[in-house]
View 1 (cartoon, rainbow, N blue to C red):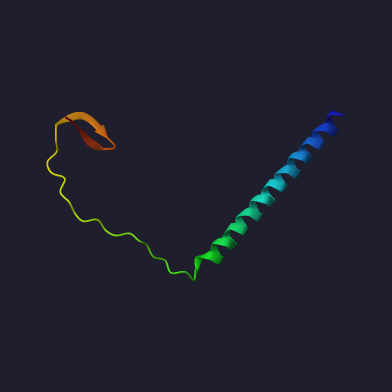
View 2: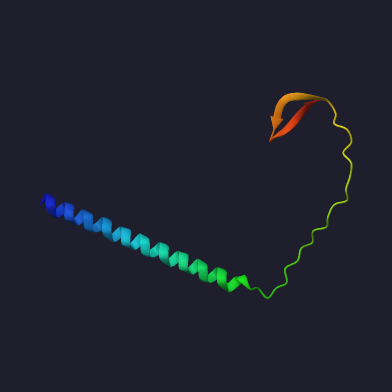
Length: 77
């Protein structure tokens, strides 16, 4: 009885593994087809970005502190 239960458990795990693998293959192949179909778009790619005018920030206010914020020195006012 125990060997029958073990065999059924192994078969169930094998079936679940096969179903999972097939669903992964189906998803990845669908994504590739979608990417290929939209890679050559007929729409012109353009942006509304305009470069900013350069401006001067002036001298740094305060004294340098021993702490850094995102690799930049911080200053105490």
